[in-house]
Image (cartoon, rainbow over all chains, first blue to last red):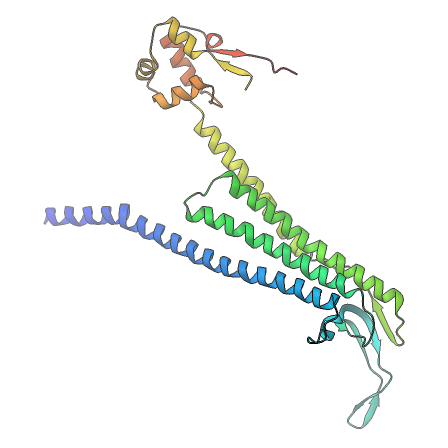
Length: 232
Length: 70
């Protein structure tokens, strides 16, 4: 009886020490590998998206006829108020109505919209920043799958991702704002009150700063580990 | 690093090998090699005490401060 108990105890000890650990390592490794594959697919899709934007930009530049690009020529606006001249008929009663504080895409037919290139640029910058974030994430995951967790390169990539996230909150929005400013200054709208707002995403900025801080802490951790390693 | 380790000089003076010192002090040869080659970033007082005791020297005999040029 005692021998059987000892054997059982030994089995549990062995399970706890080896099998369970290996199982967790394998599980983590599979999750990492799966994420790496997803990131790789996303990376290629993003590359394809950038290529598409460049191709569409070239189509616009050469004003090709075989592709209808009119939809692209609209631009994003923020309006404070749109007053409609025609009344709204509701249950046989006429009502004056308006739209307030909205966002939409304004299309003006047959207008030489040079600013469309600025919009394309905003989309391109946006895509490139996303691409860079995915690119650095891929590199981190490559290191992780090679069992290299706490290396300075990973810390450096985290910091670069943080900078990219902060840029993502500012740069494309700045270009959009400038584009809007160009148009709204030159076109008059009757009964439409348009405001060109610069609305950057504060949450994205906070996220970027948080990631940057994590990067700094990560690098400091590596430094401390090195200090520990070279302390005799 | 402006701090230079003179462990090799002291070992030569005491006619002692690194392996022997490692055995006497109870530190791995790898760690002593780090100290000897100047790669060490810090040294514990306990380690310093043991080394000084075995080599019969002062901490100042083991380390030297050299000012950076420029």
